[in-house]
Length: 475
Ligand code: ASP
Image 1 (cartoon, rainbow, N blue to C red):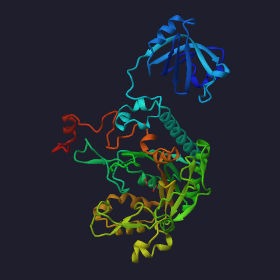
Image 2: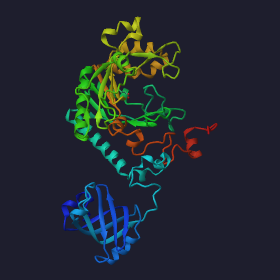
Image 3: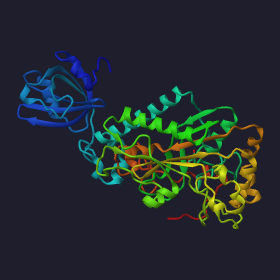
Image 4: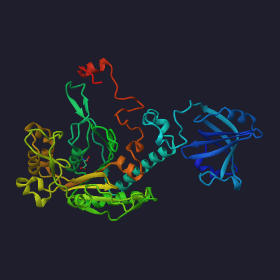
């Protein structure tokens, strides 16, 4: 729109005739004068329609309703001292309208976006997410998210990291959850799996000679919905580095997130720098959890207590749900994932006392939430094979990971990484109770992509092409 001035910049145009455009936030009729607050993505401005200035604009303003899209011309004026609204960034200004054009009328919105929408029912908020996202809190959350991601990118690129994309249509990546499967049309009866994380690809990239990799990928896990987990998919910062020790990963992560908070959230205070480190044993003994909340004052919304939990046991007891129950004989399951390296001092225990082997795993904790995890990886094919055996892989299952073992025979440096969850981090930093508050279009807690109404049935022809027949439907 030609000559349009963004509302957030009006203070630089005092005395000028300008064009603004946006949504009608509220309208107030005061007898002769009509006031509207107009909203665009940069802010709000009070606009006055006075019939003495423009009869036509005043008449049009009478018909305006909430959320109509309009463009208004008028003169930017300073308000008299006694009418300044100190709560609003533009509270010292108003626009004296001399013209208005209705760009697009709007139905009455299903809920009021001029107020915080957290009290509105989830169903309506997610079905009409595009309206919900107009509210101030959701706008702030989305913008903060963008700033966080941009900060991370700039930080890592300045440290010589290379951002590399890895496939979404791929094979099962065992991170301990169920896979989402995608049927192949070209090879009927075969399936891709959506990645639970780029774990194997990032390790292969290290073998390819990329010594500092990162990506901000979407990961997919078909887990039952839970309040602090997004259903189906989530975004993480995926990092992998060659020739590093655990200390290098901890230092880099700590510097990244400490400076990110200081830059993007200057109002927040980090409880302890450097971040406290606890061994898994200490955390359990002192806090009865491996993700302790180390805030000094848990009611201070601006306090952020980062911490590390280290020295996890490499194995946990295997349960029925574990991916690894292959042979059915093994009792061990990796507590992180099967590529995590055992502590070098504990390697002899792999043969004698596996449950007492420590893993070179690191968990990043924030205010009592696990916000990221990673490890130093195994790069010796013999140790990797031993782990496969301990977790009870059948020959068939071992074959599925042949490419990793093979890659490791072609020259791979020691390596390790971490993957902090972007959604989880934002939820905690912004003090939101739920991941859905920091994701633009999250699934409902029942797993429905609400605006698009997915999952949905597909045409019979599509299924035929895929060689799929639906036998019975679960209601
Ligand atoms: N792949 C792991 C995860 O997604 C993170 C890592 O080990 O780097 O949790």
